[in-house]
Amino acid sequence: MTTSQTTARVCTWSELDEDQPMAKITRRRIIGEKMMISRVQLSRGFEVPSHSHDNEQIAVVLEGEIEFGLGDDEAETVTLTAGQVLHIPSNVPHSARALQDTLILDLFSPPSETTGVDAHS
Image (cartoon, rainbow, N blue to C red; front, side, top):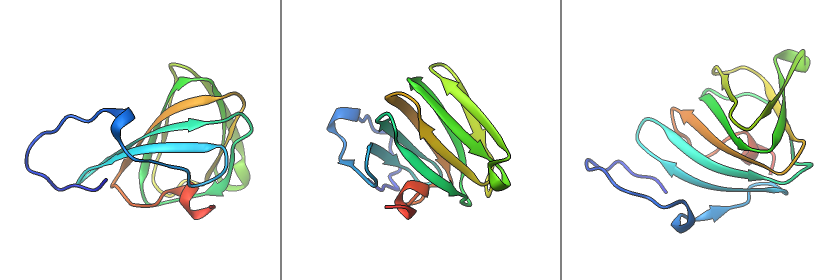
């Protein structure tokens, strides 16, 4: 859903189109002019290999547990649970692995039609 509207709008997650760019992931997105938010449901065992992108990313974990590999050769790993937030600056290599069924809100700026999970589908 892409928009460059000049008026505010209300969206309901359950009414937005859902896609499945890889196995074990479903996502619904609102893509604005300068930012994007995705509601991402990951099944336990979901993995996306290390990748990077020009977008700055903020991952808000609402439910579950997820491990991120960060930096070149995934030199650092962090495990997040509900209530934790990870900020990934643009062009920082990162991977992700869902340790449990996990619900995340992903914010990207600038927005783009594709993200790291689309590149690996």
